[in-house]
Image (cartoon, rainbow, N blue to C red; front, top):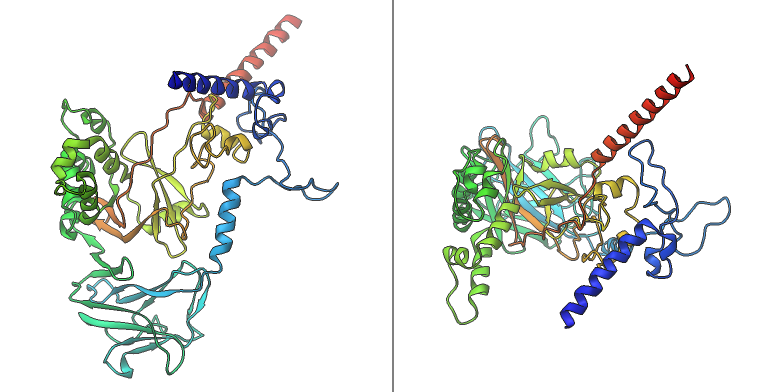
Length: 491
């Protein structure tokens, strides 16, 4: 009885919302105040026109109304206020500079480098700081000078290359196959701020800091496919098993799959095989933690095959979500995203998009809990954004109707955000490992096992911006035909 009552109430509420979106004036007393703000029209700037039944309101003031002739205050959604408050709080986090990557033994086409990253919320001036190879004397010391790049902004990196005639600010000592590199702050008696130790990383391989005590290593390029990259890097046996089980290895290699009778075969056959993919790879230890969790406290951990028998849909959703169409290294992403804080990219799964963000250091972040919950009317999220509805109260309902804390249309309205204090996004701890120089794809290794975001089906068939443009063109053509008929009648 309780279930039936709840279902009936939900259906009634949804019906009232749809009714009020189309007849806002008559519903003001039936809905909360944050849904009563739909009484004015919008100028779409020459694009598709917003329908008269769903007008967009003028922005409401946040606190007090603007004085006559003064600037208008724009209402800020709750999620954006919270984000601004967190960003302000992060500014109080002191600078924290670490050695984040080194290339100790370059190939002929490479140059040795040391990368420093500021993990904190304040900028750090490195003037007078030193990079020193332990036990090698003063000849193995690099001092940061004011005339060279020496300031690292919050969440940013500084790349220091080997000294040569074109790079007078570089370090002059040689990085050997086994070293301990120490970073000292300014001062003769200064203590070491950070260090990185390595041994036989491999020629052409970069050593990355994954955490305070863990490191990853990878080459810049591996000749072969994305599957060859995973095999060469090692520690990705489970990922390889899952990709091969679903036939996704064939998709990554640009090959089609044969017709099969398993539930996922048709989905895989319809995937795009025309171009290389970007794969976010998850290490074996992260999968092992899931194996232990699903087996229970007293049972031995599951194997990859046993997990597939228990819940192959969960595994398929995760692995297909981690396959992003087109090869995206950090440089290409930076050019693509430009001033956008985040951007959604189509994955191999037709119903999911991966939302990526770059921090100031160029680190790739994957927001795996960001989806477009479709608005309750027939107009899609792209139309809502085009009409300027993203800041309206009903679009930011804290999950009241949308079922999502950020409300409707998360990535279309730019609500997706990777918070350095909440650690809510997966981070690429190894980046830009190309397969055959990117022709076969790119691999980034992320720091955790993720869940695939939910697929939320729209309540009504969605009207796209392209549909609206076609409709506007048809209306204009009909008006022109009517004008021609009137002219004929006059004659």
